[in-house]
Every structure is written in C-alpha cells, then in structure tokens.
Image (cartoon, rainbow, N blue to C red):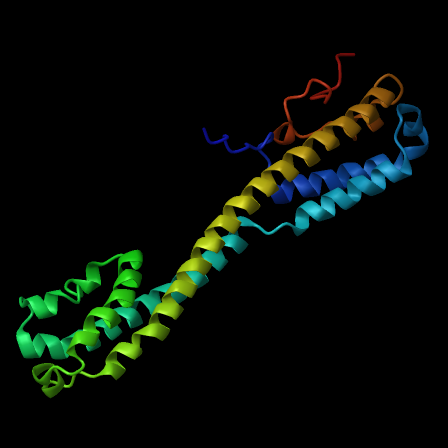
Length: 234
C-alpha cells in the first residue's frame, strides 16, 4: 500500500510561516541572554535561521508547474510533428491502394490524431519496418513513396520520446518537491513552536509584555501543547 502523503501541520502559507519564524527568531535572539536558562544557545538560533532560509529556498509549486508546462508544450509540438510525419509517410500508400486497403492498414496510421503518445511512439517504430515492403513497390513509388519518408521518422521518435520523458520527470519532480516542502514546513513549524514555548515559559511570570513576543499565531500551530495560544488569566 502506498504511504499517505504528508500533510502540513499548520494553516499558514509557506511564505507567512517563514515570515513568522523570522520574527520569532529575532525576538529569541534579542532575549538570548535571559533564555540561556531555558537551554537556548547562539548556535541553536543560527541553525534555526539557516533552516528558515533553506525552507524559503525550496522550489514552490508554481516553479514546478512551470517546468511541467514548458515540457508539456514541447512534447505536444513533438507529438504533432510525429503525427504529421506518419501521415506524410503513409499518404502515398493511401493514394496507391486506398485507406481501407490491407496495404494502408498494415501501417496502422489510421486515426493517428486520436492515438496516445505511447501509441504514436509505437507506430513510429513499426512503420519503418512495415513500410520497407513498399520501397520497391511500383504503385507506391509512382505515388511518391520512398525510403526517405521512412528514415525521416527516426528523429521524430527521438524528439517525442525525449520530451515525453522530460514531462514525466517534471511531474515526478513536482511530487517529490511537494513532499520535501511539506516535511520542511512541518519541521520548521514544530521547531519554532518549541523555541517560542521556551521564551513564553521563561517570561510569563516575570514580564507579560515580553511573554507576548513568543505567542504564536494560531494559524501556525502544530497542535502541540507546548506552544502557548494565549497568556494565562491574571
């Protein structure tokens, strides 16, 4: 069974989470001398800041969709070129024998515009082999059939296969990037909650104003009971 995709542990957008974490990092850093008693160190906050920047640097879904769209567009151009090339190769056989003849049907190019990419790729491979029988066929040659029409299919296959592969690779990369970004989001959100809880706990009985610096927006909550939602009643 396929593992379920991870879900974000907060409702903030990625950009808003990064902004809030940066704000909390700065508050923690400004109060680091006092928060050393809670186990916070300069090294921990430096790593926190680096984690924020690494999260911000991850490719967004818009970035990945652009890559998919670009490759899909080029795949579609290659697909139409392949269909045109197959029609070009088969037209002399159609003129010589008719589109319902066994000769024409042997090429399997009928309804080429409805064939899927895998079917077109398969046809690009089979037509040169089957079509070789017509290279010296007088009726086909008289209608313009030649070996050149068959050899022209090889680069069309290469181009279509390349862009179809790149499109699928971009789709896979998007899935991987999405999972990576969600896991990074959850890790950053949880870490921020932990550090804010330390700051809040340290100041809540001493300085309510400072304690408020470490109250996280509910939109970013990770469900942990260690993160304060609001100060206790006075």
